[in-house]
Amino acid sequence: MGAVKTKRMPRAVREQQMLDAAVRIFGQRGYMAASMDDIAELAGVSKPLVYLYLNSKDDLFLAVIRREAAALTEAVRTAVRLDQPADRRLWDGLLAFFTHTARHPDAWSVLHLHARTHGEPFAAEVTAMRAEIVTFVTRLIAVAAREAHRNPDLADHEVAGLAEALVGAAESLAAWANTGDGVGARQAAATLMNFAWAGLGSLMAGRAWSPPAP
Amino acid sequence: MGAVKTKRMPRAVREQQMLDAAVRIFGQRGYMAASMDDIAELAGVSKPLVYLYLNSKDDLFLAVIRREAAALTEAVRTAVRLDQPADRRLWDGLLAFFTHTARHPDAWSVLHLHARTHGEPFAAEVTAMRAEIVTFVTRLIAVAAREAHRNPDLADHEVAGLAEALVGAAESLAAWANTGDGVGARQAAATLMNFAWAGLGSLMAGRAWSPPAP
Image (cartoon, rainbow over all chains, first blue to last red; front, side, top):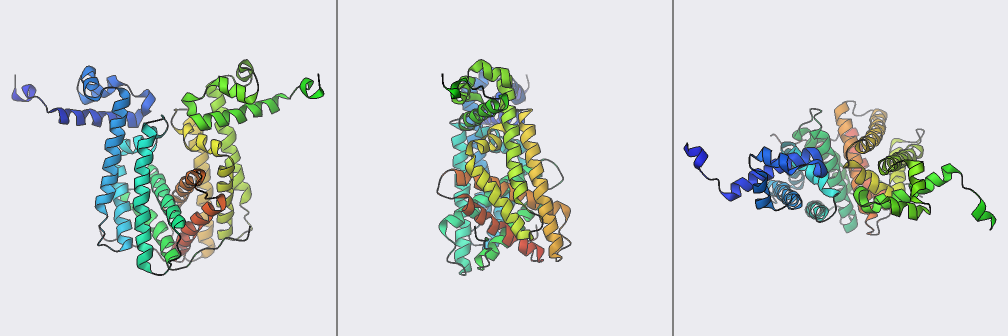
């Protein structure tokens, strides 16, 4: 027997391989259609080993959601440096988001789609991740508005709404970019940055749009 | 027996009552947890009658998706009048969207959430509805850009991306407004209009944001 075959893989490494396989199967087929047989096969291990390490299909799904949610928020957070100007921070965050979702399309499908509709505890994990990102973006916008010094009247709920809008737009564009129309991460980020920054920039300069009377 | 009790209800009316009940049960519990017993009870009819009219849980779910998708697109389309200026058209469309989703939160949950992750033919219906709305918004933006006469270089894929961003932002804000933070339809529409119009307005005036070199 060669050295490669006899060498035992550390548990942590094998577990990550199982999670890698699970992301792909869950992401491409959804929770219901995903089978533990296929996940074990793709990971190159036996099914009992998957159960031994991850316990159940539910626990495996939850572990996938947690790992991928942490990876996505981490990617966005580390890309944004607070010593940069406001528009550069927003650009860096968006580019990191679109780059990550383009590189990990199956993970994005799990988070954006499949994790949301199979009840708890799955939906709560994604809700928490999304809330964390919205809070992060809300703070970015609030700081940018303060720096602009031009519109101190941008109310808290208005900033929260803008952050919700921005995150929703990013989610939509990530799915659009991933359908393979040839729109890369950079293009998606530039489109949203233009949409968002020109708009936020106008707002911060006090150039708001006024609705007609009801 | 009184006149009310003996009067037979036309099939079309009864069917709509069943669909009303189904929207509520599917929207609040999701596809898997929804039971035909509960739907029949809420509609005030026997379960066999539901099967007689709607055939199966799958067919009932599909009928709900089709009815609610048609109602939502109809609400947005009829609100937008082409003799209005571009910003007014966008405002009217957004206000109609948020008013409709606020009045029909269960229908919105079905379309935005539950219909997407139970395979075909359900997902295809929502994808088609969304594509129709994105196309409609894309045309609104393209016409507005043409009217502005200032930025003929707003490329087709850029307009398509802006429409995707706008629709995603609207979806996100509809869910946010429906969580009951006291943000009404008008406020949600005003927030997005400010975000979108100030941004699109700047773009059309040729004030684009430029990304830093890679």
